[in-house]
Length: 303
Image (spheres, helix red, strand yellow):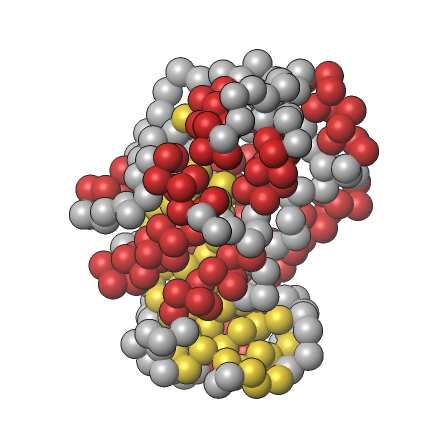
């Protein structure tokens, strides 16, 4: 494969992809809000994710464009933060659409971030790409607007795939680090009622699934989740076991709401039931290396 562009590639997921793809592409370009520079053959180009400033020329002759841009939802949903969560996703997707259309030789395949949070809270039904039920609240409506901004502009010479990604479990970033810390200090019990589902994927399978989508040229919507959603209660019990603890203090909804206020985040991130399955990946023959939580935890907790 020739040229890979990752926008917002300096964050946790960007670094996971960079590590996975660094020997698989001849040229890798990271679009970043930081300074333009070259490090170990990786080219970092400054962009503001809203306007053209020269970065758009990098899209010429690209094999793959992966857009990860968007303000983290791990914050309080204040009016200002809500606005930024929305605009950071829509603006970056809109300007990339314009950039792709302006190319003489546009990227062959564009993969754009989305979220498995687009599906409604579900304790009763597993959501796949075909008959998953889209919900209606702030987070879900952001996801709908994001996907609409991506797909409503037709790019005749560029394949398009939206990635409905769940919680990515990684050693050095993402949600697993604080969850593991909580469990180690004894707060590894269920959160809220504990019956809400967690859809998750190991960082290595996240990167492998992206490579699979590129190789198979899968377009449209793809759920980037492991095959077995698990209840919050069972998730925490398995984590306790792998850490070597026999107990974990549960955190009730009220405490979660107070705690979320103090660490400036939203309880929804823990309490929403994401019951999502990777039908398209599996139907196309993708095999998960970490198909069970036990395998994922054992790998992530290895010294």
